Length: 328
Ligand SMILES: Nc1nc2c(ncn2[C@@H]2O[C@H](COP(=O)(O)OP(=O)(O)OP(=O)(O)O)[C@@H](O)[C@H]2O)c(=O)[nH]1
Ligand SMILES: C[S@@+](CC[C@H](N)C(=O)[O-])C[C@H]1O[C@@H](n2cnc3c(N)ncnc32)[C@H](O)[C@@H]1O
Ligand code: SF4
Ligand code: SF4
Image (tube, rainbow, N blue to C red; front, side, top):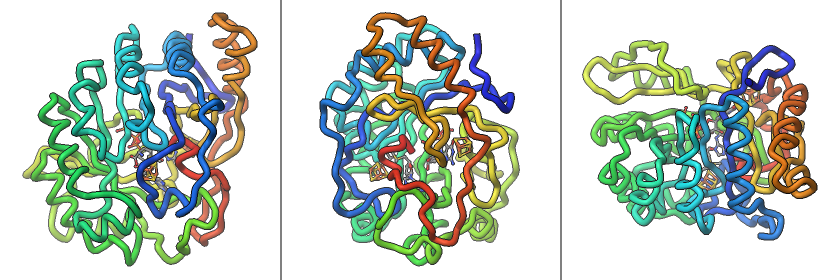
């Protein structure tokens, strides 16, 4: 069985948010003062495992754990081990800020997680601290190296580029990715969340600008490689690292959308840039143990999936929900 939406797109990829909490407060993701969900509203780990099983039985091949910061969720290692054993799940990854990897990488790998995406926007400690508001660069770099030592072969860095804040570090970030033998994706900032503290119209930096800066030093060879995610990948002739561009504004990828999200409180969010959603926690709690009913609710929800986002770069907030609530 497969999940097909009203536009004929097949959904094979679920981004599961395990918490809205985070130890960082990145300037593009959150406001400085945040209120998080009370723990009682979160899905239990057991419910997350049930949901994942339902999705896999419906043809989902890829699950990426995200948040908030997935490594601050208590019990994350147990959840990873449970999902890592799901027959039919071919691609199992996590997107993390990396600060907890030195502690958790080995258990995550042993639990069956195979791909890690680590957010890294600056290699200058004070600037890293300013962009994350609380983060310590050294712990993230230690985390990336610990993940490599634990056995992770597929590591991708994610850098959100903001004009005037970190656009002068693009080549340094590429050099770092080459040296560490990891991939790197450059992301255009998306307009989620209010009062984040800067004007997004001023900081917008398009992927074409980023690409031009990289091409001044490295040839970028287009590839057709895909991870089922939104990154368009390029290779460099003299490195195994791939360079990706995630360009929701300048190169819209919604026509090929293959994913949905589940928020930490169990809302099936059908599009990152819209509010269409279905409360799967309510279905699970009303009908405990009824996997068929849960699957039917998921199949029906596909008809609510919108065609695309309508983000603009003029600085207006289009979605009040913050990225940490979205499972970004
Ligand atoms: N607009 C939009 N942005 C997305 C979507 N999926 C991922 N992103 C954004 O892409 C950025 C990187 O996401 P990752 O967590 O690394 O996920 P990915 O690029 O799918 O990961 P891979 O599995 O490595 O392909 C984040 O800013 C996400 O919010 C999507 O469906 N729509
Ligand atoms: C919300 S975070 C959750 C996972 C983890 N805490 C991390 O930072 O990797 C997932 C990804 O979304 C990106 N992100 C957050 N806010 C964004 C925004 N407004 N526009 C584009 N990407 C954003 C982050 O850089 C990160 O790569
Ligand atoms: S981007 Fe990730 S690390 Fe940064 S505040 Fe958001 S959830 Fe936390
Ligand atoms: S914005 Fe919505 S439709 Fe577009 S790729 Fe993301 S989830 Fe899919």
